[in-house]
Image (cartoon, rainbow, N blue to C red):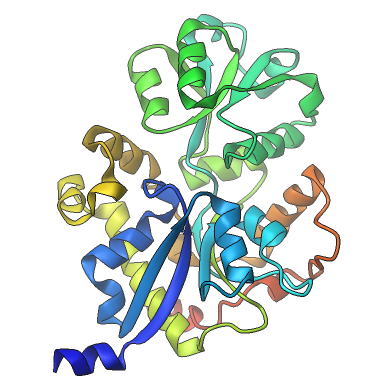
Length: 321
């Protein structure tokens, strides 16, 4: 009987952006650990890539049926024959980071505009918070060239904030919470809550999501089953006691226990309700991307946001609630 059940399950492979500890993609890890995929008749294999572009490229090369990655990576690295992938389930509104100001400078840096001419750092040029910073600056009509923008690595950024050597820095948890709790920094802009992210970026945006190739998506019934599992997993991440998740998740997803607790608490309010991405949300996010840099030559971005979305399998699930 067990063999028959396995035989009847539909196999889906998902390329997931690393690292394993990323809170953006935690619902996928929870769905796997809790057995939500198998309960929906799916045999889902999660293949972790080093970073977000790798997941998009795996989808484009046919190495995965879906990619869990950022919109930025999907549109810039996931196109096939000029056609970008389509979004089937939204995960997070923005990277779960906070813009911190060292305590030593909180009297002089009270607004985003106060960062002009100051030293501001990210962990690395390819980190998710890097384009987020550009979107934030653009929203406040500030050019990146008006700042002294540095890339210091996570440990270097933490040390520089603690020493007051910077005027601002974008950090994720656990360090964002720790620096604030220890009195070494204050929060200027918090993107770990979707409502706050929308306030700072000029409206709701989409960061991490699941994508399929435009030319060969999985069956609608399989996408619906996947969405049901993810809806359960997101709710679990948002509401489950931390100790319960710790007991179920594998060690490589948890990492250090105290780090996991901080990451989880910082990300519980970042997920997109119901996985549903509105047309105007996608339109704003694409416009922010385009303002930072042109899309690669040969990639055709549809004028209508609806053409980048494939939410028909998800809609009946939300209508039934």
